[in-house]
Every structure is written in structure tokens, then in C-alpha cells.
Length: 214
Image (tube, rainbow, N blue to C red; front, side, top):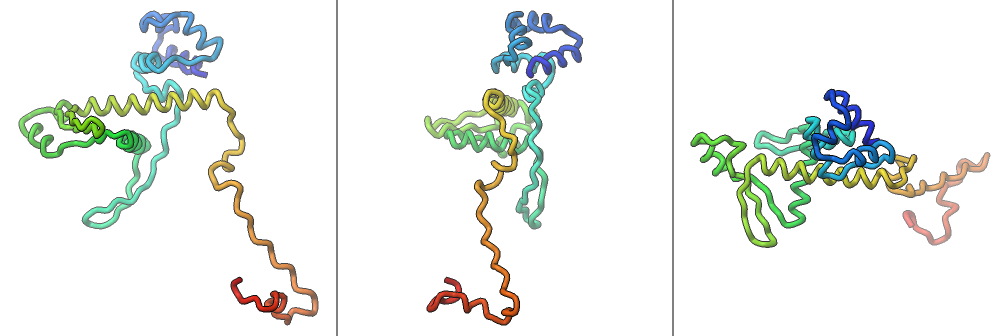
């Protein structure tokens, strides 16, 4: 339940739920609903709470991190298998999602080299390009802008899906839905040959005129 995690963070920070509500401008009745009715805050409030406690929205919802994944990359020296952290996989998913919506995001390497060479902090340099394919416009952004955008998309998406999972039925048959279902039927085993007739060729039982492989 969300309130249990909220109360745990309050204790860790040395504050009371009432004090947190007052500091963030949240009604005390809202906090009571978290506790008594098991409700969860809206996303904007969740983000404020995460910033207040110095944690991520995933931590507030107790969302487990995505497992790392091994992928094979091609380099000039040959192929190499590397392990991508779960966070990297999530951010790649965000980029792919935005691309499907018509927004391309990338970094202008030559502009980055030019600005950083003149002493500009790489995090403050407007070298990230956002192309809006629908409106045919291009924008320049800082790395912090891109990080904030991706974090908000990820946080909100996971918040919404976990809100849904909280309301629907959980199945106890986990593996059933991770493989093709129903499983393909295995071919029946051939019946054992009659005793004393082991020299009879198996093809003798085939219908007349049938060819092998039919």
C-alpha cells in the first residue's frame, strides 16, 4: 500500500505525515485517504513527494528496477557483448516511443565539440536536437531538458500502469502467459510393436499407395 511506503519515508526523514502535507500544500484529508482507503496521490503530487524525500517516483511506488540485458554490438574491431543497465533500456524505450509519435531526439556532435571547446559546460550546452516531424520544426535543448523529459515520461507511464495493475486481477499462473498458449500438442507416441513380430517393417502399416513423408 502506498501509505506504508510514504510513512516509512517520513520516519527516515524524521518528519510526520502532517508536516509533509503542510510543507507540500496537501490537504490532511487527502493523506487520511491514503491511509484509510488505500488511495494513491495523483502524479503531480507523487512527483512533489519524490523531490521532497529525495527519491524517485519508482521508489515511492516500490517499483523494482528493470533487469539488465546483454546485447551484441558491432565495433570496428569486431563484435562485443555488453550489458545494458535497466535504466538504459528504459530510456531507449522512451526514444523509440517518441519516434513513433513523430519526434526525433539526438545530439549534434559537432556543435557539442564546438561549444565545449569554448568552455561551455556540456550539460548546459544546447546541443540536443528535437525534430518535430509533424510540424517540420527543429529545436535545441540542454541535456538536463532531455533528462527531465525522459524521466517524466517514464515516471508517468509506470505510475499509470501500476495504478491499473492495482485495480485488476492478478493471475497466479505466471508462466502460462509468458509462453505461447495453449502449448502445441506433442505427437502421440508410436504404439509398441506386438511381441514376436519385431521384424515387421513399420511402413507395412501405412495405407496402400502412401509415400514416405505424407
